[in-house]
Each structure stands twice: as structure tokens, then as C-alpha cells.
Amino acid sequence: MMFAIPFPMIDPVLVEIGPFAIRWYALAYITGILLGWRLARVLVQRTPKVATPEQVDEFVTWVTLGIILGGRLGYVLFYRPGYYITAPWEAFYLWHGGMSFHGGALGVIVAMFLFAKRNGLDWVAFADRVVCVVPIGLFLGRCANFINGELWGRVAPDVPWAMVFPTGGPDPRHPSQLYQAFLEGIALFTVLMILARSERIRSRPGFLSGAFLAGYGVARVVGEFFRQPDAHLGFLFAGATMGQLLSLPMILVGAWLMARAKESHA
Image (cartoon, rainbow, N blue to C red):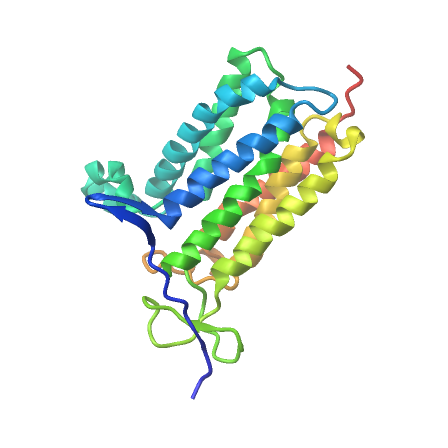
């Protein structure tokens, strides 16, 4: 008999009052934005200063819209285009779930660009500080995935810490959500915070943004080796998953940004 750790059955609904319910997943988004907002207010003031705390306060609305709209649109286009062609109105059913990090990232990039131009900010330098707080939300989001018992890993009968997920069949699987929470959240956040402590790094517009893109891309590619690909997509080109294919351009763009980042003496 294969050994497996029992999955901790946690109600995905944190609080329910009548028809209203607060889910762990929604709480992860809200908490991630709030914690990221408070840290970003500090980071933008480090020399060279790129924005004011009040501008960060205003940006919270922009980034929230970027995350939600970009994340949903990315899921529709990258993961379920065939389905939503037949039922396009369901693309607006956010309560049915389905968000894409890569789509959310594009949404945030657009939000940062438009906000920076509107406020006369160096958008690349502004982005350098904002990306440093993104892993907070990634960590919380992956934890919420685990609580929901979704996006589980591949079958792992010989792994002592494998779990049988409620919707994953009888086989023990990698708790890949926790692997990704560590790689995309804790590890990436630690690297970015170490880099952001250096004034010389902060003075090279684009370096921190590049480090985030490349770092996330590597973390996602590694994490996908343990995660079960989406059933309706399966393995794609050369056995890669959609998450891996979407992450490769991030690694290349991130490496390019770091290589071209020049120290600013302004």
C-alpha cells in the first residue's frame, strides 16, 4: 500500500454570512495587496527615490484592476480559449474561478506604465520597486490553492510527504502548491529583498524588474515539473506545460533587462 499524508481538509470558505461568503482565495488576494502596498510605500522612498507614498496609495486601485482584469483575460486566452469562444459571457464569471499569473503580470505592467506616465514617473524605476512585493501575493495565492485542494501535483507514490487530494483521485501526489509557494514566494522574495538593499542595484533601472521576471520564470519552470498539467491542455511542445512555455519568455526578457541595466547617476 502506498503511503500518503492525509490532506488537511480546510473549508475553502473562511466566513459565510447568509448569501455572502469570504473565501481563502479572495483573502489571499486582499492580504497580498495590502501587505505589498505597505512595503511598496517604504521601497519607493529609498534612494534614488522613484515615487511618493501617496502615489503608491493611488496606485493600489490601478494594480488591483490590472491583477483582476489581466489575470482573468490571461486565463481565458491562454488556458480555455476554445471553451470561452462557445460561451464568451462566462469570461465575466469571476466567481467561477480561473486566473492566470502571466495574464495578471501583463495587466500589472500595463497599469504601471499608464500610471507612471500619468504621474510623470520613470516607469521602469517605479516597476523595480513594485515587483519586489509581488512574491507576497504569490506565496499567499499558492497557499490558497493548497487549501482549496486545487492545482495539485503529479503522482508521487514514493514521496513520503505525498498527499491524496479530494479531487485528485486515489493516488498520492506532490503537494506542488507548497513547492511553488516556497519557490515563487519565499525564495523569490528573499532574493529581491537582498538585491533591493543595494543602492547600486536600485540605481540601475530595470535590474530588479529583470531579476523578478527571470526569477519567477525559473521558479515556475521548476515548479511545473512537479505539478499536474491542466487536464484540458496536458503536455504541450516537447513535453512542456503551458506554464513552462509562458515562463520561458519571462526568463529571456528578465536576463536581457538585467544585462542592459546601466547605473544611473541622476
